[in-house]
Image 1 (cartoon, helix red, strand yellow):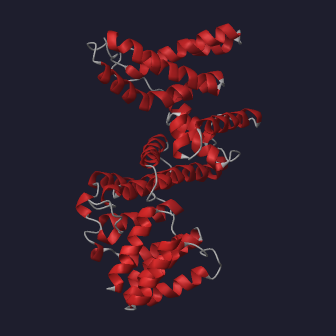
Image 2: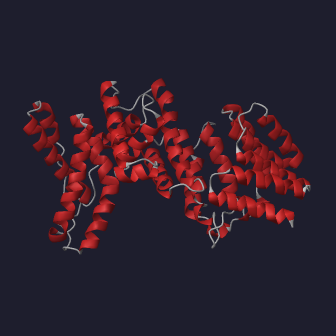
Image 3: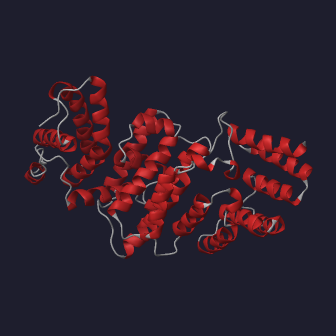
Length: 411
């Protein structure tokens, strides 16, 4: 039975809470049955609108997700009847009635598979990376188009067109709505994980939108729940949780950006760290996210900056650089070796990383050199390098932090 009719604000909160899990589940299921992305999203959205209209008077249902699924299903049936589509789709929709008497949503294997299918379809390599990110946020996470446009720094009309083109591309290219298996899964899964990690990094960077990081963590948890046998999925979850645990400690009370060494570790989210370490315990293979997760866990479990196990981090970066070479990984490897074996070792690796030109114009490479030079004792040269790095960064917070470091060394 529904609960007693609540106030408007409480209804809005109840609808928002139900939509977190129900919206992507409804969309995924309706896409499977109808094959129509726009219809699935419209019906899912309409179910939320109807809830806002009815729940103030009728009360919040015992099974809000089931109630929303019923409304969305009925709306889809009405639309398809008017369109005189084949009877098979109407029959399949009629079988989607959830048990509203149950206190919990009835989640069968089809529903779980639907959500996996949706993630893999949104992250298909035939789509541009920006389209994958936007489609994942809209369809899997239920983020409104206007919010996605703001996060990606485009107009709402532009984002609407991008989403429409992405859905059209899926239809025209005949992209299958399924989770690949065997070698195809091995081939496709890294692309899915890359989209999730891109979402996370866009929210975790200094001037990033926190909603990106929050959604990436939620999606990583979902994917890990749906694919518990996949080691790199658990590794990605461990990585984002260990990194995300520091978000509240990255700035001081005045809003100044703090380096890892200067953060108050008492402000780190210990629950997130514990969850991340538990996920890491399930990792059985040495993939790129596994090595990054181990590095993040070393930082997360160090009682202080001085207690950081830099030799282990340096060895992990050695393995990661062999597995997934890139200029940024080479730069981070130089930092790790600089702290593990002294600044001269770090500078030697930094010179090697710069040799290929991949770090040209990258201000953080200059900042790393400044830190290593400062630790060698050349404070004035280091101050000049920090100012050089500050002049090249786009982030106001990063610029201020680099200039503060330069001023400290110049005193």
